[in-house]
Length: 255
Length: 283
Image (tube, rainbow over all chains, first blue to last red; front, side, top):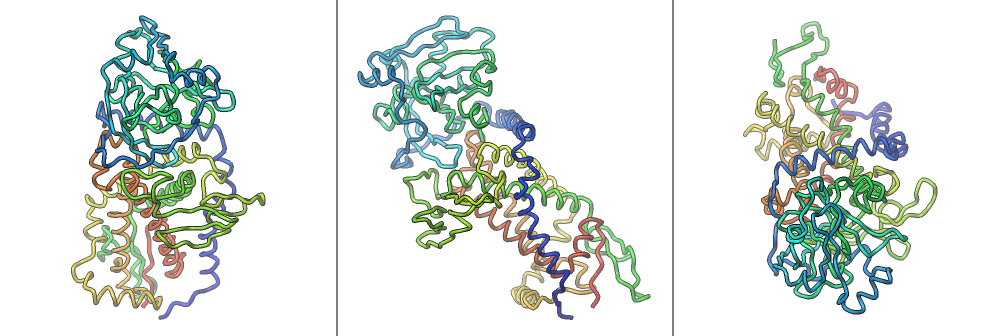
């Protein structure tokens, strides 16, 4: 018997074919825009963080050969902070710059760029992954964050390290935060060099955080001050970073 | 009792003598639950995935890839036209890809249109929440079903083609029959035909594992934990490309799958995926 399509066949096909349109057309009945639903779905981030930490432990992010580096490492985010104090520092090649490390530390300290560059450094060729999907491989030289925290010491109740930056989006200064595991990871550095040259302003001079197992928006540029805190609740809107507060990106950002 | 070839030996209603239809127990509970879970999760994964693609509508091969690097695929807009470029070939896709009109009548320059994405207006943070939440259900569903298929012998008895079936002559014969919309009837419809077996094995054993593993390969923390993932797929940007290609092939599978269900008798087919009971088409 040869199959002959009936009217019912076409109706069924039409209904099945229209299903995704209906789904999207009503935005899954408004669910996709609901804050409650979005928060509930976002909670899977905690699961991802715990599972990935379990699987990865202190494992290092992959490091690459010089031949594998991106020919052009694009900039993104802010490429020149509008802050006048920053611009004055930049004009003097950051000669007057000093990094403040304070908050829940035993000994609040200021580090000049020369002092930071005199400390033992780490150079790593790593991949930078933007949350939007692109990747670029570059060479970063800087001081391990753990070295600075060793000098200042951390108080017992310190849980997070916050990075306060010179750049802003519509008047709101950029900030990011990481937990102590990430802060003590050997590849977590404050970079002052990139691709065998001083870190360019477009990439965050004088200091840029590299936290290699996380996405691009965690790699805070133009770091002016580091603060150890017990909780992220009083930072910005309480989600731990500028983009986390502004548009709801995940704080963990490991995937 | 007759062996249906689908695990459970049961002829629920063998009215062959009285001339009535033969009903067999075709799909076991695990298959049915997984199937309908996938109907939901796969659509959410695909549509939220397109929003994530829209954030950077370019694909690359290798470890790195950004705007200054060569993209083998790109969706964009130029001179008030939308386009899809694959390699050196550019197709005008105005209205569908690259440049289209939103539900409220605005012209939007973005890769995939609002009706194909979750959420319908571009929001990367929300799309990632949907994608990364349902990824758990999707991935563990695949893992559990694959394990069940091995343990229950569903894989070896029902899904893997026999040596006789993968003979080129046999496959060509089945292709010719399908092209004429002549589907197996009666006893021949008790088992999956070779084209079904190859499609289902391709999806279960190749596409679904590939889409999950390439998804994991895009995670920088997973790259630290399981660096071999980068070696398997040739880099994070290659993994992103393969993720997109595998998803596209899954869409193709869904289209053909739904077309076949409709052509083969949608009521009987859909009912069999709900109750498990399938009426063998009469000879």
